[in-house]
Structures are given as structure tokens and as C-alpha cells.
Image (cartoon, rainbow, N blue to C red; front, side, top):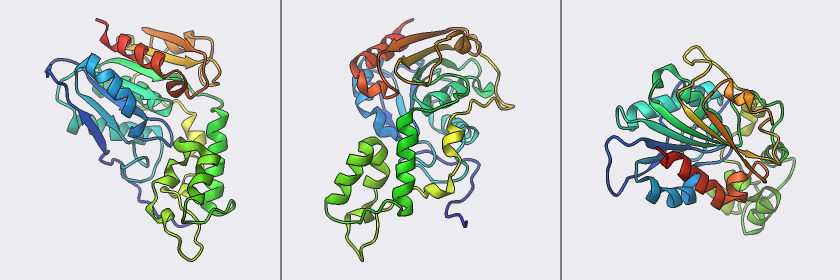
Length: 287
């Protein structure tokens, strides 16, 4: 199979930046990282809720192959972390401490960054939303099912024609707004032409192993195996398969970790929005 996308070691990530009303040059900056197939849009409402309480610089990124950031191979955790390190080096004020909030895959990227030797003593706190610092044998069923549907639509196995409103309604009915976003953002899909089928923003056939890769926890040569100085909050959805009930597995990597339980599926941030946001604010504001 010929590939449409290039291979790049590092890409420049697209991001939004919320500036504080009262600048504090020594306050930790906050960096938000979305989950698999998501984008910075995931954190739009969260940022509106937390920014008045934190009064600091808030950066929200699109990781490679997501949102408005460049598309390139590989789509792996080492590639994500290299991009993020480049982003921090070029866009984040020098010397400022860093807090992270990451949802799902984004939480795993954040925890890997907290172990990176180049950020040693700079990362202060991490909120990992329904994701642990170890390999997960399974992923939420909704992720697997929707990735399968995306591939079936993108390949034409499940035929949805461009144009009108019906294609959009079908996508939302099948995938919802979150997983259907990759079709909804494609302008060509809104124009009926020669009965062509709708297209996905990413050539998904070039990433056949990505779901398996998203399960992995990878310690690379530029990372420590554990970090006792970083404070970690794992928000666990009790109806999700992602976080094991043995929380000592988390503390092997981050001894200074706590877990807060939510009666939700993996979609924790959406199902218990108010409590999730309150938890983030209280954790990041505390001295």
C-alpha cells in the first residue's frame, strides 16, 4: 500500500492559548492533552470553567494526526511525546513549572512527559482522566467499535454518500459527535458530486495497528521508570476497563499518586462534568 502521509520525527503542534487576567510569571502553566480521535475542542468548556480559578496560562494542543495539527507517521506514544517536548521548548515560557490535564490517551502522554528526564523537576502535577501508567490489556468497547465503524465507512464497506444532511445525520447516529468528528470536519463531504462517498480527515488505512499501540505504556531511554516528586491524580471511571482496582500499580510509577472514583464509563469528563472539573480545580489550586 502506498502511503499518503510523510514520516516525521517531530511536527509543530496546533494549539490555543488562554492568557491569565493577572499574569503571574512564576505560576505553573497548564497544558491540556485530548484523547484518541479527539481534539483541543474536548477542553473548550473545561477551560472556560477552570481558567478563572487558576489564573494562569492554559495551552491546549492538538496532537499529531488530530485536529489541526500536521498528519504524519508514526502515530505512537514516543512520537507524541517528542512533539510535546518540542512544543514545550518552543511555545511554553522558559522555566515555568508545568501542570498537565490529559484525557485517556492524552493522560498517558502527560504521565510519560512527567517521567521525561528533560522535564525533571519541572512537572508539578498531572491529572490523568481514566488512564493509568501501565499497559492496558483492553480498551473501552466504544473505542474499538467506533474505530471499526470509521474504517468501514472510510473504506466504503459501509456506504454513505456525500451531500445534503442525510450523510451527517447518519454519521452522528452511528458514531456520535466525538467519533464522527473526522467526517464532519471534511468540507468535501458537504458537496454532492458524482455519488462519491464521504471521506475521513485521516487516511485510517495507514494506521492498522494504532488501537493496539494505544494500549501500551512505553518507557524509553529518555524517561525514568518512576517519579516520586510529581503529584498525580487519576480520575477513574468505575464502569470503565481502563484502571485496575489495585492502585498500587499506579504508585509503583508515581508514589505520590491519588485516585478519585467516578460512577461513569470511560467518558468520565462528559458524564460527570461538574464533579470532574471541580476535582481538577481543587487538585491544581491546592498548595
